[in-house]
Length: 250
Image 1 (cartoon, rainbow, N blue to C red):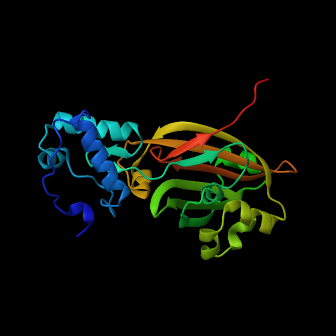
Image 2 (cartoon, rainbow, N blue to C red):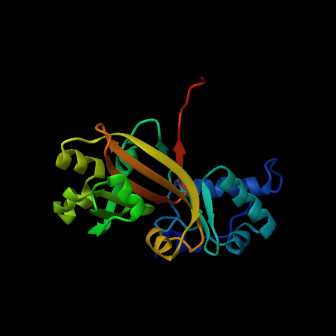
Image 3 (tube, rainbow, N blue to C red):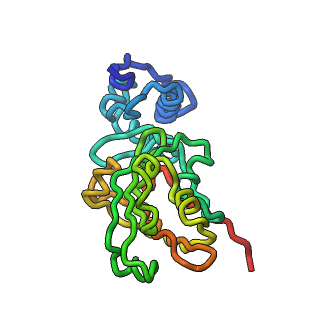
């Protein structure tokens, strides 16, 4: 039985304390989250369970949970309940790095899971970027932080990379493979970010509900010679992820 499944004893609150009841509850829950009492699932008790434990109304419980959400300590998942928020991930756009490397540089326990690796006829839009090539390598990889899916990546790469073994592709960033196989890595990239709702395939891979919002990063990378070497889409869970860009005034 996980720690979060253990029934906690009724916990009295100080009614004479200057601190409001909901703030006392928020503080107690925060202490328990920091102590890891809700691992491994991260799921907090239901509103009714918290209310029974502290002897307060659900309105008071909601105020406590709202406070924790505003502080970034808790996330609500529709139809599932409240969960301990994972560590926030920041993706800097100032420097060109692979998606995987940007996670590793933050000291995160970042891993990749290769879902598919196959040679394909490039879609028309992609073919225009890789011209005159007609075929390319399509990779579908799941990016995880602390074992939790955070992004689904789909990358079109030069056909020459198809000779790599499954294990190599699963463990190494695309930019590393490009540099080794092609003799040069990317020197620039065009990046665009938009919002999209998850379809069934994305939801299954990212362990979310169909229709939940995602951030989508489209990245097209180029060699110094000007040729396209990578066209990727990353479908990112937004509750733990943010893109950051520093700029100067001109």
